[in-house]
Length: 502
Image 1 (cartoon, rainbow, N blue to C red):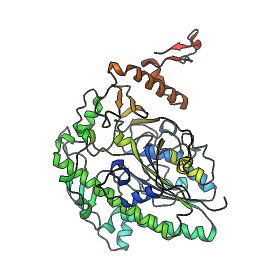
Image 2: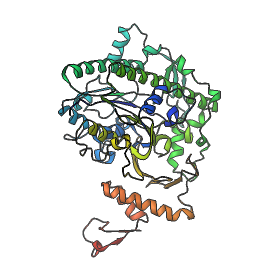
Image 3: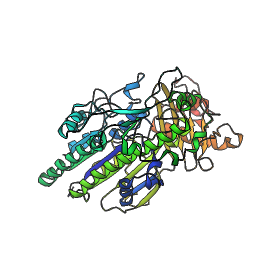
Image 4: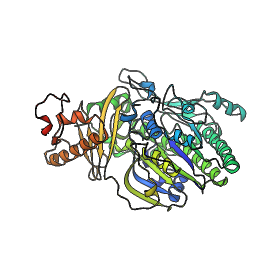
């Protein structure tokens, strides 16, 4: 490479797409992410490979889909899945380090328990877990250095569990100034690292990759007064899917609603939770703005690709749910995706189906490295540069469980969504007529031909990529003829001449 090419990668956690101004929300202040979108490319059909932290983050690290890298659940509630990537697994950071890059990852890791960020070549304090680790020595040292008060909360918001116990903490008022928040601390550490990398870039022409991973706006939404009270609950419009009845839906969704205590809380509580969540979004947007301003001040933006996304979305009351879980709704699978490449057109909006997974190949491609080892990832550079290139007309997502094993696969096309739930009822949504996914049309007779076409489409895609979920579909659904022995025994006489599976 003639000139060093750098990357600033910003990832939030559990971030709803519809909280961003650039995605159509006029009521939430996200001026810095809106400005980033205006200077680069906004993807309207950007999906997470799976709506759970560890598998999604491991996919970014490896460029491999969850079924392939096999980190399938968060370790805190893991029910027996693998918790660390195997030795020898390809990671983009390994490729960058071999190419001479400085690599930093500040903030949330959550992509392994024994192997941490340093094991993959990243600099940065080892901040473990799913929430802000407010007792971490580096954060406490930051507070002491700036004479700032420690963590203290009040006005805790939570419901009541089915067993009568207190529900999970959903939100609280934080008694700290903005400068003491974990989000401000992370932005400050990112600014410090940017300055160090800029010096090494100037002095030694050493390029860098710097990731800033916020823990929020993941629940619980714990923010200072100004953000806790920033948005008026009385002006909050509740999501249409709050009318969810779970009729003709997998029973696990109603169970999850009870787990998240939705019906034990009032409508006023729901409005306040959404208001506080939006305050959290604005707080994080302001911290992103500080980091982007520093990158500009240091003269880095002409050589640095900037990417923004989230590992997945958040329900915040949609479908009478909170958090995420075994329900493949747009609320948690469609996320924001913004990419700014120096010299590329500004203000683009792309409609192709792309994935958080694709950031891996994009980073490698931008840095002049081979993206092929990121086997399930595709570089977005042609789209960001405004090229008209052939692209897939659908996207596949997967889920493997969280509190318990729960395998799901999803096919999202231009208009429809098919979700296969082996232990339960399948789901089919017409997103043109039913954008809130309230009406499962899978069993409706008039949808049979479409259902068969979508099922066959998903089957072929899973089989082509080597996702063994397809074996269940072979015997259970109408997917046409197959060209192999479904028993895989080699004993079925004549089976290899074509076996009817439907």
